[in-house]
Length: 262
Image (cartoon, rainbow, N blue to C red; front, side):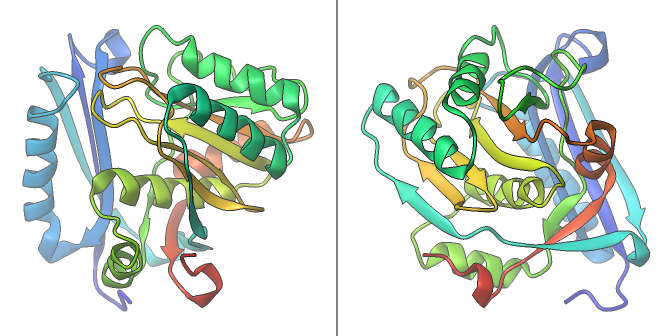
């Protein structure tokens, strides 16, 4: 899609009480990979998002702009999308456990992973890496977690059309699908569990290469501002290599017939 046009990575993170590295409370984050002529507009949009967010007013906002070299780019396919019905938190979490088990996570690990998110005192910036068999944590990054970055779709118009056909739009589902598709393509990843930290957004998902992106309507209570992610990984996973892929590898997500939205 992009041909020989210059591409730039834009990353925004916002916190309250100072930078994240100095104990600031995470407010919001966003990223895009876009053409040079769209950088100014997107930077302004990110700034507005950081200033006016459901989680509160940020007093620290960082926006980073970097040139992307063509040789850095790799591709993954968009996960197939489907939705699970759930009318309550309890029902949603029961569905999530069943979906994780279907993807290959043991019942023990699934319960521990879900409980790890539910027990967070506040949202993490990144994700926990959890053993898909035992449920024990396999990274040593504490409350920072593994932050998945350097990703976008290779054809924004085609991607938006695919979502719109099923009544989906907005930043939440867009960003979640892109991230879940990158994560599912990581070596050693079995499945992902996530629900948002936005207090007015109660939806979450289970993602996996096996079953695709399974959107779950309710995974937390309304006005709850704590959310998080767990990546369930095989016990023999090369953790440093996976972290490098998640944080550094530039990935474009392709929308095509093999990843059609069901």
